[in-house]
Image (cartoon, rainbow, N blue to C red; front, side, top):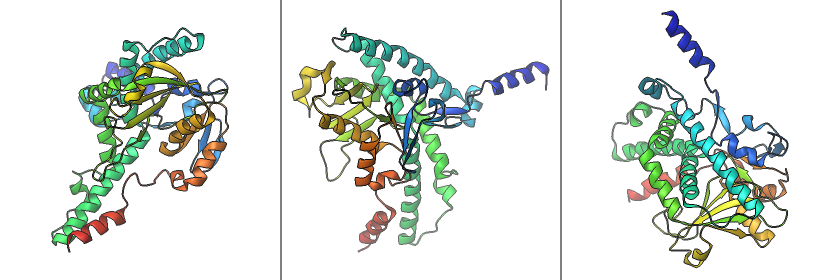
Length: 334
């Protein structure tokens, strides 16, 4: 190995990002209490603590890809591309919040709305929650395939062959990487968000919005017997994304919330504590494991989890249980 090649490899190794955030530090910093420290509630352990933001919503080499390394020459290609958009988010978010705080905000500018749409589309796909859901989907595929083979009295191949030579964890990791690299799909998702009715909620009184390790949250207001109504393009969808303890972006579809059209792009002050409870509950319910607060008051978080203890488990099922699938196959044989 020549000296220039060794030097290049040493330089790349020294500049590797080991601790990779699935919720960026530039986002979390707006919810810090002292410098770079943030109040955290661990739903699984039922305790709170106050670490540095560099140590939360992150995992070692979360986005590293050996395959991308072979293609691009940099296995940290995704991590570094995410870093570029994070810097832009910090600049734009700072300007929006400054205008809101100083009374200069009139309406969200189209260029800011366009950027935030893309940023939130990326955030939607980059979290640990997506990785967990993808892995559970791969595990479900194994279960269904085995049940079908058993019911049909067919030879069952090894798990790795069913999933194309990969484990459920590897399938989940690859699916997330592909989603973050598919700019066309990200732009499609961003355009769906852009077309919704937007308003910027301002926290009531001295209360604060909380956030989590899965800050892009949704509520489907309609139901359907045959399909989920919780997608970002569904009629009746409501999407919430906290910008800071004081401000939160709400997006709703234009068909189901036509009465809110006059709020589009504007600031909207919440009128009571019940409205704050409504907005904050989704961060608790839809977080993977950690809830974040600038003030450290997690009394409401504990109340929600006492009422919904299943949400404490980071490995809870994101859809039907294995028994549901088993019963479904048994029923189909009658």
